[in-house]
Image (cartoon, rainbow, N blue to C red; front, side, top):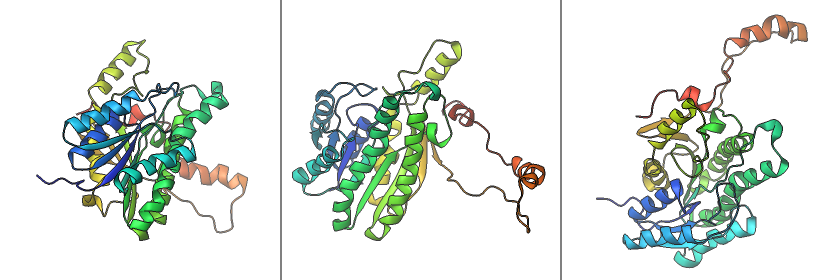
Length: 304
């Protein structure tokens, strides 16, 4: 059986558990040498523990693969640079990055503190930028590389109480497209993946009502190992023509997600006044308004 990641070196951030762990293990099983990065914090970003990364490294080695641990934080430029240097110092190259590290500080927008906003943005958005930027120098020199950014339907569609998380995840789509455009001439690809899976990150969802309990029961059916095959594919040379796209994995379903494009237009040769917009422009556009959906409204059927 072909090993699609043979001789590749990949960095997977937030790989001490959940989706990141499964991606790291799957990449190693396909022949990759993996830098397993995780600082071992709680889901809200507190504490440091080298244990989770070391445990995943041992799992990979026990299965006959190659891996080293990294416990540097993605949320600081110098620290993120050390994650990439860990790959270079150990294996002499870097071929792929999975920006998976994340934390949650859920709060309704009108109650959200500056610290709650900053903490989430720094890990998800700044962290993805810092690691990608550090890797980009090597990708350019090698004229090859692939980046997978973990986005979320909380940003792509919407969700309650996650303005910080949603904003960072939607920003990642723009960051990914910019990287794809800027680095195309160096054979560097950048794509986004929005996973549905049960992990520590979603384990804090309330289960106070029957509706909430039913929602969690559905999510628990969607295990992290369902996400790994697409992530590994996007890192591999088999995906050489896949660039600037946004995908979703929901149990056994794969989706290609839309990206913003014009839906409808109206024209007035002499220009628009406020009155014209009230009487004509907005009524004509209103039929195509995007509803205030949440993720669960769009993905309303049970996982299959």
